[in-house]
Image (cartoon, rainbow, N blue to C red; front, side, top):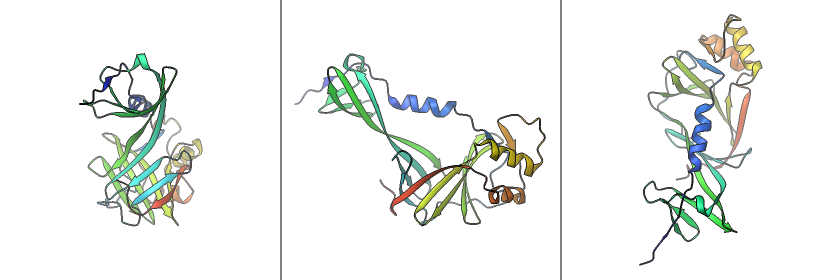
Amino acid sequence: MKKYKPILRILPVTLLCISVLVSCNPPVTFKEPQPAGVQNSPEFPKHLQGTYLSVADSSTLIISNKVMRRISLIKDTVNRHDIDTGFVQQGDTLFNPYTGETFRFTEKGGTLYTSRDYIDTIFQIDYDNVLRKWKGYYFINIRYDKEAWVVKKVELNKGKLSISSISALTDIEKLKEITEATDDTLAPYSFAPTKKEFSEFVIEEGFGDTEIFIRISRIPME
């Protein structure tokens, strides 16, 4: 039977990614899912499902009937003596039998150059993640707090998928003007627009922070 060489102390790259995500507070939240008064959609429609490639960083976006997830290739370097003892070496791969984590690597001069796929579930339809369709757009609503929702706009046009967020100062000023919010409102800003006010915000090209993905398959990648 082949024996696997134990490795020493490696820090999972996913922990860094998670800490970065948690530390990022949204600039704007809504007091209820948007658009207000629109029924929730039980799943992503067939025409939206598929596999997409980000034009920004070549990560992959997969949309199935209820889940949107992103797969990114994470690279790192580590000294062989700093690898956690829970890892074993299997050829060109580090494997932790207890957590299932795997890292592909190449080695040069005692330094391991590792890479692995990081899977981030962006959205999964459930009680705290609400999908709504309205006027050709899809809006993913993610519960941030008891009465606070982060909203993103999703649009598919000729194989190009856009996921748009609110972040720019101009977006916030538009919302404050449309909803007649008082000037003493402090960040993170919280809004409760009517359906008409939300419509006006969308028409005036709110959701100004946009990432583009190109569809490479109509079938979600397993």
